[in-house]
Image 1 (cartoon, rainbow, N blue to C red):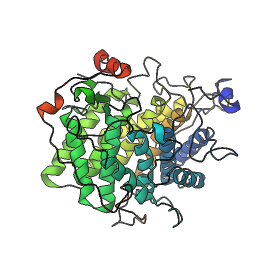
Image 2 (cartoon, rainbow, N blue to C red):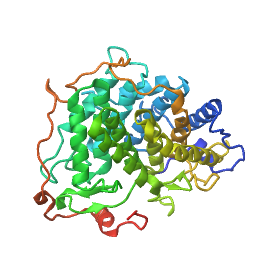
Image 3 (cartoon, rainbow, N blue to C red):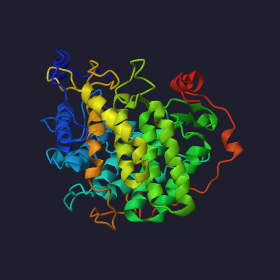
Length: 450
């Protein structure tokens, strides 16, 4: 993909100003002002609202999934700040990309769309429902129904032909990575299932979340010490792992586990509490002096465009989890506040003096810029307002989004729960890895926690 350099982006390299983002992490007005500045910078990259643009899409090199993640960040922005500046664009973008079956499978993306890509758009719709983002007109798809459609379409893809279940990374056989079962695709499904259960109080969703957690732990995508590894190849019946760890994987499972803790009691709740604490403990690998960093690529300066945005999702879901599992607040407060201060310091670049960089550990702008860098800083800073806002609603506590339990199924029935059990035999066997996955599986990672 060619890197987009336009007049605005080109100017960012022209000079580094000393203006910077002035953030007082304990002052709501300071936080809101900082978030507004960063959100404005992020939206400067968006061209879908311009003549000839496609609503919802970011220009290259940004892929479709990251646009969905960005709209989720702007739903959060409205939720935290009350600023409606971008609401119309958010609604237009989400509704334009729903596709003919209202399941976020639009024709302009379907050929290359993966389960994780669809999952990020589905989670944005779920956020809109549970945070009471303004509902679309009655003639348009509704937020809850869109999230249900993503969940249902993915439940139908549960794959029992290898590894005892799970979702493949890719939806279609002709895409590279079809034989890869990765943490983020399965984590998005787990996250969405738990949140749908919370919102609707339908036990089926909780059952799916439980089964997904059981599966990712059985194949060791989530290790006994709660490290979350990138993925595994089902041509090898998931017997080997790519041990790379990414911030967004920790975040997506943390929020799902926090929802499950919130909706259980007794022994089950104690089990989920242990899992949550385990994820947070394992996530220490992503912090240096309490400041978040992408350990797999930042030290070597080789984060790609996708990876430049990953810190946004650990930031987003770490803050959100404190509303659902309040006992973690003391465990993550320092991470969130110190990282937010460091992120603000990184937003001191470009001709405008407030462009955000990749590395928060340097104390200043590192010369990089983009949607991901802006979104990272936006989520960690606006998340400081989590104590100022209401938690997610359900259909029993003021939720107004209309659902459709059979959305995404092509019929009038809801997918049932998977029934197979992983056995030793499921993990045995051999296959051929793609070159990129082979490097991950055999090369390992020097920074991996033992």
